[in-house]
Length: 280
Image 1 (cartoon, one colour):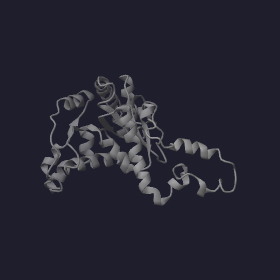
Image 2 (tube, rainbow, N blue to C red):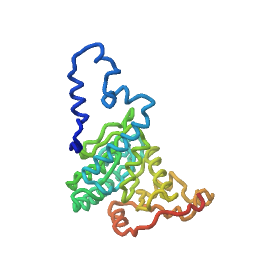
Image 3 (cartoon, one colour):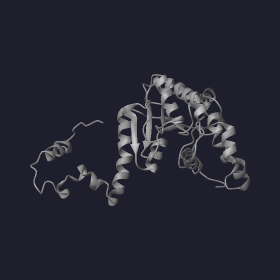
Image 4 (cartoon, rainbow, N blue to C red):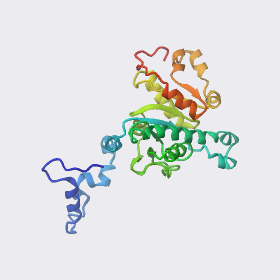
């Protein structure tokens, strides 16, 4: 992160280093004496939640700006989708059958990263949740193309370590799901959703809701695997029930392959955000 000193006042790093070297006395060892911004216990207090939310919004935003990332291609998908070579180890037959989407996610990310490389990795940068499965495939595809990619990890009791293909300088870790989801969408030029579980569907429906309600600009919104998504979600039943409008079904498209998805993105005609939400 850029640490350029832009004012004549003593900087925080200097004071933090100086405070570490003070004599050991009962006073200096007291938690009260610690600099507030260097006191982990203080920063983790319940009353400091608003500050932590702000910090978690600011840190990735500042670092992405400094890296020069201006737009991203969002790749959502399940952590449990195995590589095709490992499909015999899958917990269920369905997961084994879905393993080909690992390769499609990898190829899609490779093709999009080749395009991103034309802007020196500033535009159309692949961003994933940074974990295993489809997320790993996305970051891996970027490496295949010799480019960079972003990983937005979150601390969990499981599946929390970043995969080895995320660009280290663009590998972030989050405490708050809400702030993490904001960062997925703040630079999104397209959203691609592969088969997944609760987390994937949470991300899918939040993004769709933002577009449906006009809170986010319309972008290519692609669901990989029509058979999976139509089995899991009865989209037409929602429209028939009137809980969504028929035109809401046009907010996304089904695709099956990486090549098809890239073609949709490249031929996309930019559309304005919704100004009304009929049938919501």
